[in-house]
Image (tube, rainbow, N blue to C red):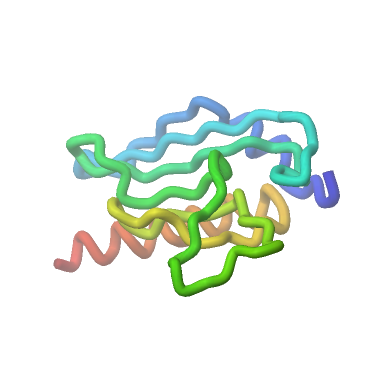
Length: 121
């Protein structure tokens, strides 16, 4: 792995469920996998925020390649596996994985933002 910053913390959080109040909750999954072109950092992860009925409303993961809109040309391009889902129906946008620490920081910042928006509406 290029940058191990925060890696053990992320791995220690594997299978964690974290209550966010009001029925909202976070699930964290993270484990080591073989380094590949699709997963160059050797970590498979899924960090998700769920609403009270269980629907994912925010997520960061690398379970699949992001499908770019049809207006983009695919020829010769590698599709990113690291991505985030910004809302329940979002198919995903690329996420620039730098380190496990940065992943956690970005995810929890987005969780705070989403929950603040929900609570203000």
